[in-house]
Length: 147
Image (cartoon, rainbow, N blue to C red; front, side):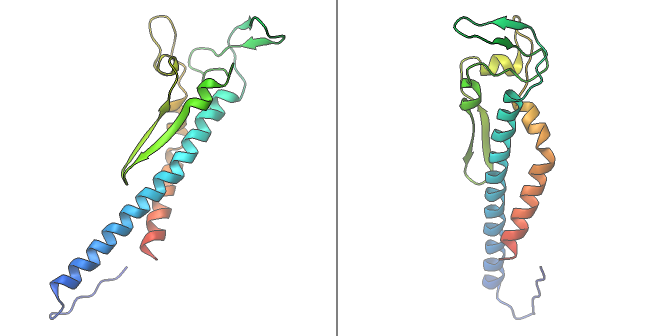
């Protein structure tokens, strides 16, 4: 982007140009968050769903197959699918993203407590998408500024 000003250029024209660039940048950031939001939810659900889990085997009443639990430090093992379905990312404005899960045990699994060891899945999803996030923002801001 090149900006050239001549001595007689109006200040109002200059201000309009920069306001437009600011709006385009914000729009690019908003679009970057939209792309990142999809990636984060998809990755967190993948971490829960995909094996290998290396915890204990349990007999679950009413089920024929044994359930393989997750070990401390692994993403939680899928049993009913409620945790995976509750994962969401909500965008607020152009510069804020809320990412989490909404079950009564989601926080306990992510952070652990005195009875349950950590089984991070949200933080791992964020770590796994750090490079993607930069790419999304760079690509979307560049795309908006060239329109």
